[in-house]
Amino acid sequence: MRVELADIISCENKEMSRQVEIELMSFESKLGQFPIVDRAPFVLKFTNENHKRLLIQGETEVTIAIPCDRCLENVDKKFPIVIDKEFDLTGSNVEKSMEESNYMIGTNLDVDQLIFGEILVSWPMKVLCNEDCKGICKRCGANLNLTECQCQKTEPDPRMAAIQDIFNKFKEV
Ligand SMILES: [Zn+2]
Ligand SMILES: [Zn+2]
Image 1 (spheres, rainbow, N blue to C red):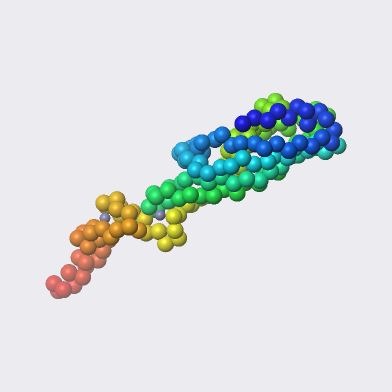
Image 2: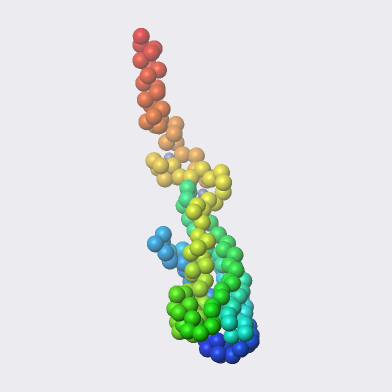
């Protein structure tokens, strides 16, 4: 969704509150594509402060399904978003400061692009379904939180096998 801000920018001390919607259905980055499973309309407040500063403020929350780093099950990760942007309105700085942001197209605010940027900067380094997630078995792919696979029992870990060999050698001596 886009909001035209020309009025606010040209009108000293004007304030405007608008209910905006996030149209973004998924979050796409170089890490992959993740569905946005929950989002809600929220209010953005625009303020032209003495023709010096343009303020854009608002708060919302989006929920994105991200696979757990260990077991790959989707985790509903909440992203609280606090928007508090400021543009310099003095002299010729207006256009320049707006061009530097990737969510302003001229005097048009691209709400989805703004939200995208906020999610990007708060993207977690690691997502776990649970601190104690047991992950998946590297051999058979079983989710070890749900089931106990037989791999461990039938085939010992190669490192364990090496130790076992040493033990066996000792026995032979
Ligand atoms: Zn997990
Ligand atoms: Zn297994």
